Image 1 (cartoon, rainbow over the protein chains, first blue to last red):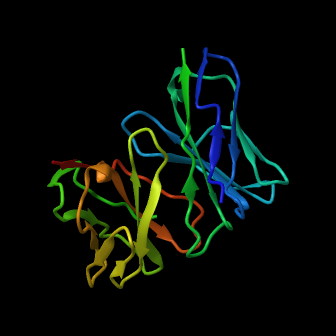
Image 2 (cartoon, each protein chain N blue to C red):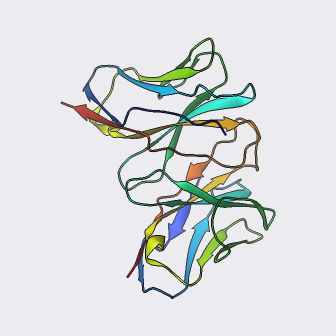
Length: 115
Length: 110
């Protein structure tokens, strides 16, 4: 069983640029969530995707957007990067959007640095 | 989702039980208590969850008070590899997100 994978592992961008982060969900999982984790803080929910549509969103501006593909993999896109976007971006997958015995499995994350 | 309160850090001797407390006084009837941990530079890892009964799995035990306003995660024989940030999270059964606080930094020392 392949776990959640993310790419790239590290990324450096400059303010104003755009970035795309990628996530492959665990086998058998059709729901993907993205989280942002600033240094020294807990992860913050960005949004969840199910059946290729956004299925819940946290308190993040529209310049944070995502996609989910038919194979359930996902992308996180961030436009007009700001210095505060520097963080660890975590992807998590699960078998379905909600319910019990349906835990989220996290990937190792992508470390984004905005200069 | 109800908020949780955890101590910022705890120390535990290797081989001893680690008892991590969590307060969730505003928990509602349909909300579950979840525990995750995050080892340095890795993604969070699910540990255990429960509603009102005590739960045990191969990783840990979860003790929830009768009024459900607090809980304790127990690692029965802590090892150095258990050093991590432990997050206590309250979530409704069909909630689509995890709301993480700052967690408790557990340091297991030899």
